[in-house]
Length: 376
Image (cartoon, rainbow, N blue to C red; front, side, top):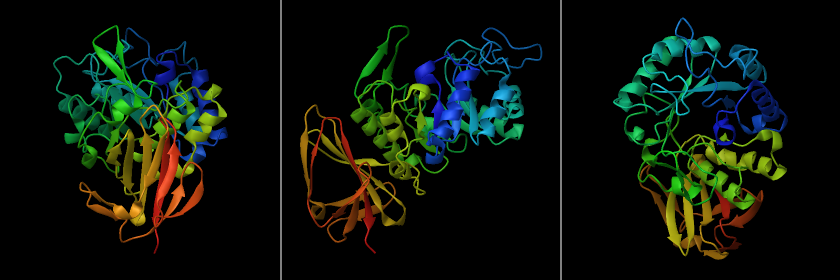
C-alpha cells in the first residue's frame, strides 16, 4: 500500500510535492490505515545523460537538496520510499533507462536507501522480458538492500507464469485511466489506457498465480481523479477484493473528505490485506449485477454485489440456495448448511445473518460489500 506520482503528475514531480504528500499520509490517517510507500514514478532524473561515473543524476531543479535528503525525510515520517526506472534504453518519458546498467543502478538505489523499485518496459526492442527482469532482480539482491521489485511490463509477456521468484508484484494490464468502463486510445503511439472494469476483466484464470509476496497488480488507483464518488467506492472495493496492491494516485493536497473516507476504509482494507492473500473471483452475473467473492482467513468470506448497469437494480439473494466453490484454492462456501453473520463494510454495520434473503436497491455503478463471518 502506498502512493505513486504518475496518475496525477506524470513527470511534473518535485521535492515539495513529495514532502507534502508524506506529511499528509501521516496527518490524514492514511499511514494508520496501512499506506506505507511513496513511489516517485518517471521523470525524477536528468533527461539526457548520466554522470562521469555512469550513475543516474536526480534532477537538481526538481530536487534541490538531493534525492538522499528527500528519502531520509520520507523515512523520518515512518514511511518507505520508491523510485522508477525501465528495462529499456530509455524510460517511457525519455529519461535514461537501465539497459546495460542493471548492477550499477541497483547499487545506486541501495546507496540512496530506497525500499521499492518500479521497473517499466518501454524502449525494449530485442530484449527478452524474463531475462531482463531476472537480471535486475539479481542486481537488486546483489546490492544488499531489501527492495520490493515491482514488475511493470503490462502483462504482455504473461509474468504470472514466471515472475514469482523474480519480483514481488507484476502489472497485469496497460495503464489505468480514470473512467469506470472505457478504453482510452492514445493518439501518439498505438496503445490504450483502460477503465476500472476493463482491467478487472482483462485477464482470465490468473488468480491462481497470485498470493503473499507475488501479487497480480491491477495498477495504481484512480480514486479521487474524476470519476463519481460512487465509482471511486466501487473501484476501491474491487481492487481490495482482488488482493491488488493498493496505491493511491491522486493529489493528496487537494483531496476531498469523501475521497479520504474511501481510501481509509479500514474494514475494506482488511479484506485486501487478509493474511490468506487470495484474489477474489466472479461467481455470478445476472441483469448487469455481478457477484464477486473472496475467501478470507478463519473460514470467513467477502462478497461484493456490483451493479455494472446504467440503472438501479433490485437485489434479492437467497443465501440458502448457494454453494460457492473456489476451484483454484479449494475453498467452499456452503450457504445451504452453514449460517454466517453479515457485516456491511461501507455502512459499518451488522445486517443480521444469511438465514434471511438479502434485499437491497443498488444504484448504477455502486457496490455492496459484505463480510460473512462463520458462526462458530
